[in-house]
Length: 398
DNA sequence: TCTGGGGTCCTAGGACCC
DNA sequence: TCTGGGGTCCTAGGACCC
Image 1 (cartoon, chains in turn orange, red, green):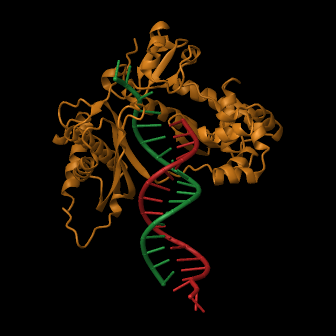
Image 2: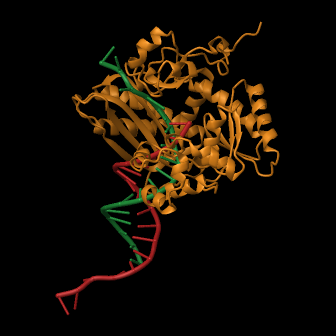
Image 3: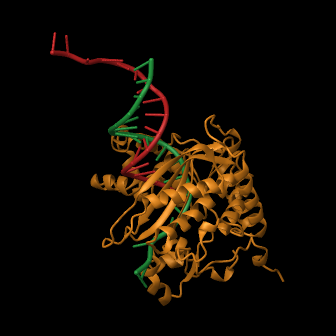
């Protein structure tokens, strides 16, 4: 949208640390670049065909996503935002689907500049399938009769079905099941035996009986995590605790933004799983807080302490992270009669830090233990601009 | 000599999603 | 030399309860 000259060009977007290809234009796919390919393995292809490369820019994508979702919400009585680029909408009471759905699509494209596709069906699983087929059908597809559904699933490859990953696919292939049409003919008991309750749901969904509800109530989340790969290996406990300081600080910011406190903080370390010649070590430990917290001081103290306990000398660490669970609203804290509480002093400091960082940019005020050199910091060499979120990057219209 | 039945909660690990 | 990050749900097994 912001670089229209790239329309029709091969373009790829890289994961964090510029590690893997995570999005490709049709033109880039045609040159044989696959989802998840490591950048360094396709570097020659990129050069040969002059493929345009971008680092991920989640702030920009998140903002554009919000625009699309709020436009969609005008057309559905219930909208369940499933991911950054997908939503399920309820169409109860809409009768003229064949004219309504193309109208929704045109409206979103017109108002946001983002092309979307819409699939309609009696269950989420079939709607996902319809959506995929819609991409080659002008952007919309309505499966509102048993006959249309049977035709749609007949040749649809099982590996593209929602809920089918590597392991389930292996089972299907052993039985020579190639298409969703074949899969759906298996008895219900077979689904239950081989795929437990998930399979039973899938079976119902495939026959047009909705088994996965549309939920527009904001669900209370179960966990919040921050993890990153390092730019270079870390072999030093002090450097490792610098990284954990930053991750725990970010985690605190995220929790405070959602007004949540955590009762458990899990810390984990990883070595490079792709290197068989490196000794592998992937320890993890969960720390239970006496009083749930979301202030940076508490979280950093725990994260760095645990990371030093987990660390083993002589190991090349590649990645680390922190996970907060046992989440409770920050205004429903359970104090403890036997433990001292600072009366919220540290919480006040964290709030002040948030205010300053919001005004002057993330990281303006940070914990000293985050360090200064940061040899582990992310690589982002091909970052696009913050067209919609930074004053300096906003496009000029002449 | 012979030792029940029905639960909950927690954690680790596996499978899946985008 | 270089391989992402953030989630959900389910199951099994252990520890505990009465």
